[in-house]
Amino acid sequence: MDEHGVYQKKGGPYQKSLVVYTGNSVVIIIFITLKEETGNMHIEYFTKSGWKNFLLSAIMWYTGITVFIMITFSEFSFVYRFLYYAKYTWPSFLLCYTLIIWIIPRFLLTKRYVLLFISNILTLAGYITLRYYNNNYFEQNPYIVFRNSEYQPGNLFDIIAIELNLGIVFTFISYGYRFFFDWVIIEQKSRKLENEKLKADLAMLRYQLNPHFLFNTINNIYYLAIIKSEKTANALLKLSELLRYVLNEKDELVPLEKETKYLLEFIELYKFRFPDEKIKITIEGESLASNFNIPPLLFITFIENAFKHGKQGTEEDPITVVIKIENKTLFYKVENIIGNNLHKEEINGIGKYNLEKRLKLLYPNRHKITFEISNNKHIAELEIPVL
Image 1 (tube, rainbow, N blue to C red):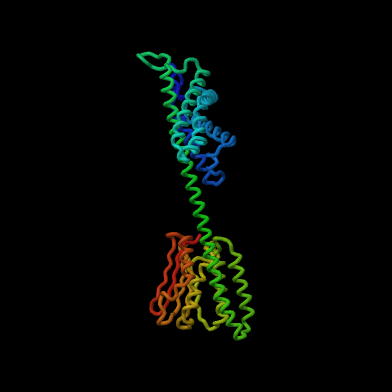
Image 2 (cartoon, rainbow, N blue to C red):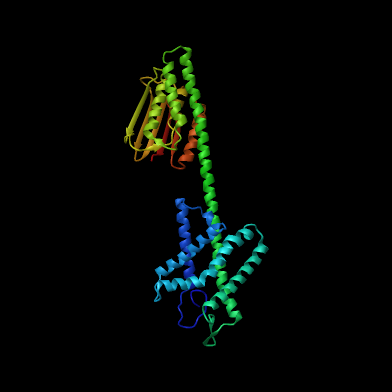
């Protein structure tokens, strides 16, 4: 048997057919995988009908043949071998294309198994017929078998057995192709849905966070207005700057320096109402001017809870804020004094819930967040990797 499934006279060119066709499979799968990873082509395109799809599939089929010829040695020239393969393998290509594009999606995927079985039988019959006439067209007495210690022309049973065997091999290859395509398509759609859900969840959490921040800040400015403080105008101006950051910042990541500046402005706004509040801010480690990025609005929750539920900071016991970077890990800590009768459950509001949920979505299994009450102090700590 030669590389095309044809039994030939002794001395004819010989290669194992499955090596050629496996080469085609590997080339096509690698091509599809690379295209899919780079986003330049959707794999669904390879399972749709149409002349463009047919042309591309044919190009990929004969590209596989070309690669096989280039990596194998033979006494025959490249052009001779390519034409040789081309004239003998096109029926196999048509069989695979018909099964992958037409029969499997129409009958297997719709669970019409009786029609699938009949279609496979008819397709194999057509394949055997095409192979028989194609081989006889290019070669005289192509089906030579070894029987009774000598080579002799094959009979009808020999011809059907030879071509049916090869046709069944290609049928299994085709089903494997289609299952591979459908599996990758399902995975791709699943990843897309997960990403869309993740973005929607993060957007929802941010929209929940912003009104929470706005409500508390407006309360502070309202108090300034009640007492007719001269700081009211400056507080409103500072609020507008903060809102501009909250509403206009659409990026998933922002520079750490920008987020830190936002935190400091928020603290400054709060001190318009409580000018005697003592807050100690420490920034340690690698420079914040470095190109580290974090999600926006991560710092506010800790300091907001300290202001809302804690006692006023004093010289002896100030509210402490620590921002430190070590080994591309951000450490953020806020510590404040609380009342004797205040329990942890009383300070677990929507801000903390939203922050924890955001962190689970943004840094699954890569973050650490803790809230602890010890010696009349509430300590909130966060660790996340920075990019």
